[in-house]
Image (tube, rainbow, N blue to C red; front, top):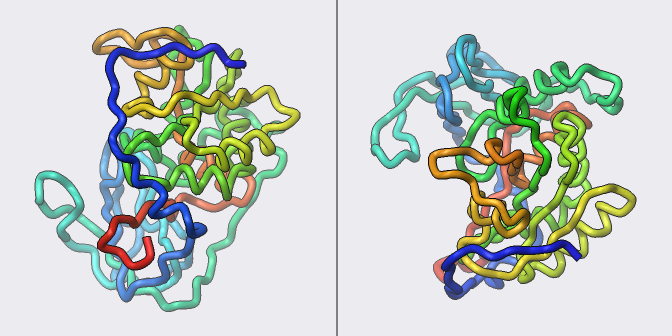
Length: 299
């Protein structure tokens, strides 16, 4: 049994997660247009490396960050670049930002991919560059470039690597369904990150209201040193600082970051993306998300 601690406060709102867990993950289908913001992460915005009228392939790099911190943007499908223009973006400011508009051609034709089955034979920097070139930034919300996060300062050794599968928010079930259906990818991606960081402890934290996800992860983690820690269901246990306190008993100092106490948190979606980038050569061009609520006929 993993020793657990508690954090002060917390609430138990109605979960309403059953609405969207009755059906498996499904593809959203191709829309008439795809709008790709050039600012998709913390750091510098990417700059387009394609022109209007170009035909691009699925997974092809369409924008890159040449100076400063950031990751490239890739085409989510094959098609033609319709425009590079200011478009409204999902941001609290309500302002527009530079975006590439792609008209899908319906062929879903992939660019050439270069999988790496033997990543342990490579230098760690090479694998970090591969993660960067795949356009991966944190999938938990903050959007911090993953290759930067996996390169902590030399004086801050990561002793504990935590994968956050708590997903405490009401209604949201994307991580739950990912853990049920893609547990092998999650554990594979986590093992790559652990190989880069060399922590003493690797643990996946999951709330006890996700029995199917817990069973799938335990099966995927058999024969590894990965702990599956089942934690009590309480909001906001999925918050990074709360989850760290539950699993380690330590508090992140005010104004500090988890690395200050030798801890790093990653999201299960990030682990899937890392696994796909290394083992399949696929860049990050999609994510699992939740469409739910009583307004939908098929949440």
